[in-house]
Image (cartoon, rainbow, N blue to C red; front, side, top):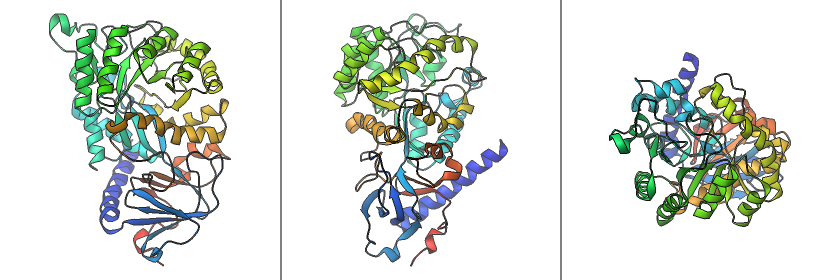
Length: 453
């Protein structure tokens, strides 16, 4: 553990140095002789040169660039340049702590920030340059990543989950009573993990509170879950009127609502309310998936597992039908051309985070390598763009093209031919660039400052 912490600290100090060096002294970086996966094409490009100016890709050309001798040169040696990876369903806080840690009487906002910042650093070093955080205390961490205090991916934050009483976001301990009747907010509410909101007016207030703090989209709990104690998976949560209130408040701010839901009943109610994205949906039938395709509603799906050693037995039991359902939903969603996004959804088991890249390979049951790479880059980026002007980072991501934000990976090998490369970021991700800044570089051209021709 000490070695891991030391490595993170060393990486962070190098990042601060690079922030200063590249942000002030060097404004142009050339990836020379690379083959590009642009985020959409089923094949790599011919060898090209890619010029990054500031935080954007400026040019892609087979020719050399003007004043190339004064640029920083990274010799790609024919390796693959591709967009940074995107995980569309993370919980940077909930995924960095165990349930006993979350429920501990000694927990503090400072300890939460410290643990989640470590996970954010490791996530970026696994090649994930953008993530959508769909519930939990996130605004402070995001701000410190954005200002350079911490190292981590771009974060599209939802803020506190919004849940009805006895809903999937009702994290109260047995001794905690209802705020509405007894006047005391629960610890989870005080720590910005959730809003327990009942009725149209409370839902409106909860949505607007998250928007006030910078939410790029709103996360509503529309059905039961597997990681909560009080709500069975099959239950439907929030009335149609309550859900419509959330959608109206979000749309007034130019953004959208995504809902946690597994079942046909919960998802159909969400669709009727005007929700734009469904998280999970592993218990859906073909008729509902066809309806989602017709209405251009996103399905943000995951590959959940049920055999992690630290999982609570109750949670494991509740998860069984979901695990069985996902084997059917992925191929059905593909068949009916539902807009698909991918994410991991790791909760309360920090050790799982190390397998984030491995989980991408599970998609090979249903998709080609090219389809998978497109999903975890370009397709996922399109869901992020649904936030419109509430997106915290304006610009093109998930693509290697002129004017796109420079979130890039230089990879040793061709992931279109061998996707397992993606699951070995330590050795195979030679360069990780976020926002035009080099976070990691283990190429032969490590001494970038003196690398002039």
